[in-house]
Amino acid sequence: MVEPEYVATIGLEVHVQLDTVSKMFCACRTSFAAPPNTAVCPVCLGYPGALPVMNRKAVEYTVRAGLMLDCDIQSHSKFDRKSYFYPDMPKNYQISQYDQPLCQGGGVEIDTDAGTRIIRLRRIHLEEDVAKNMHFAQSSGVDFNRAGTPLMEIVTQPDIESADEALGFLQTLKALMLYSGVSRCNLEEGNMRCDVNISMRPAGREALGTKAEIKNLNTFKGVQGALLYEIDRQADVLRGGGEIVQETRRWDVDVGKTFSMRIKEDDHDYRYFPDPDLMPVVLEPKEIADWRQELPEAPRARRVRFVEQYELPDYDAGVLVADKAVADYFEEAADLSSNSKAVSNWIMTEMLRMLAEREGAITDVLIRPAALAELIGLVDDETLNSNSAKEVFVSLFEDGGMPAALVKEKGLAQVSDSASIEAFVEQAIAENPKSVSDYKAGKTKAAKFLVGQVMRMSQGRSNPQLVMKALESRLAD
Amino acid sequence: MTEKKDNEALDVAYVARLARLELADHEIRDFQGQLEDIVGYVRKIQELDVSGVEPTAHPAPVVNVFREDVVGPSLKREDVLNNAPLHDEDQFLVPKIVE
Ligand SMILES: [Zn+2]
Image 1 (tube, chains in turn blue, yellow):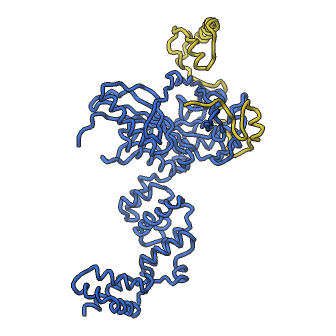
Image 2: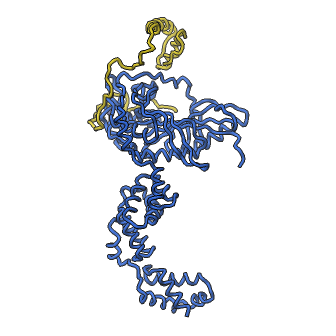
Image 3: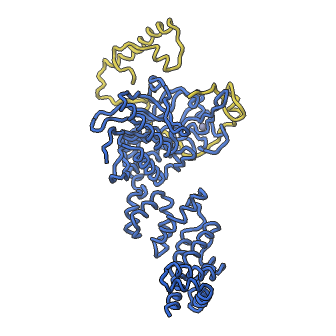
């Protein structure tokens, strides 16, 4: 492989919406779907004199997330005002945390082609989200439902070196957040949004290059696309002897390019100062220790355990643990089954495919873990062949129920008695003399065709292994 | 947090721009003197030895003022929108934002 001429240095700021029912500093509900401006009050509308009161759960969730990401939880933290002027923030400041965030340090272990790497974190702080703008021909509309929703901002060290690593980091982070139960991480609803810092430097040089910031990427694909584009763009500029301008850029997904937003540098002078309306947060060591105790098993540890306990290939374990709900489903079914690998196979193929087609969630799926375990048992004791098992799976997936009852009701049980199978075999031989002679001439394809004929005659219910055996012994004469 | 040097002159025009205040030249000159007086007054604290004092953002020794995560009533949209100079049936309207 050719050594790259330029090396990328990437840092991410990921905003993760916390899964609270009420907002960060007022009792308005957090709702993605509510009609515009129906979940608003004097606090989140920024009326003069309205006083914010902190949501205890938002603090707790941020700390739980921090523990999950190996951060140092700060026993003392405070909230600050970040000045900025934009119609999505009528107070002209956003309540955030400047120099005393709830969590410092930490890291996320990711898989790369060259093995695992730790992407270190700088900090996690808690802040309020802003309103949503909508742009019309003559004016812009503002909907304050989202304003005041609790957001964690997770800031990485500039440890990421490629677009793929950035994607890997985000996927791992999402899994960890879902595991810790602090966010629903629904990207369509904007639960995770990302700002990206990227600079390039000649390979072998220590000093970092000038960075560009790309704001407000709300899909992982967007992050990846914007980074791939910026890496090329900046390398081109440098190669041509040009200089990178420190600036904020915007990713245009339709064009597949980033564009300069031409924001004046002093717009970034946020003039942070402590918010006099909010008292500091002091966390007791006992409280932090209790939350640490309650941490769920991390995906990585679970993956190792799945390989050991259920004797799964590492690949299967990796696919299953990537989504906590999928892993939970697997575990429930596998504990009821004597064939964990089959459980894994069904989930990784039929289940995830059908869920993807219907954009469904495994938590709502009608085929319950006990039903899947029973279905696998019916295949293993040869009551069902694989074709009928798939048919049963689809039916259970669509309508729920238990497989044994369904097999009985629909008469799907596999035909394994030799008399019926031999009768079908006789018929197939009688009807297909050409295939019989082909078979005798050593053409294996002909055998498959004859088995297919028997399966068709029995509406797919014969035991294919027994059919093959019967054919072999019949035609051996 | 932004005044880096003790004796650095206050840039009133810059501060005004950050606060989106439009000041005439004579106002900038007036405020220059007034603000420097105020900053100079606060600067007196630097004559004291505060090396043993923890920085504090609040004079009151109160921490952890929380509310539980419970939904309460919001305002009626009609009332809320009527407070604004411009709105349509469900949103506040502001001069068109250009990115
Ligand atoms: Zn509110």
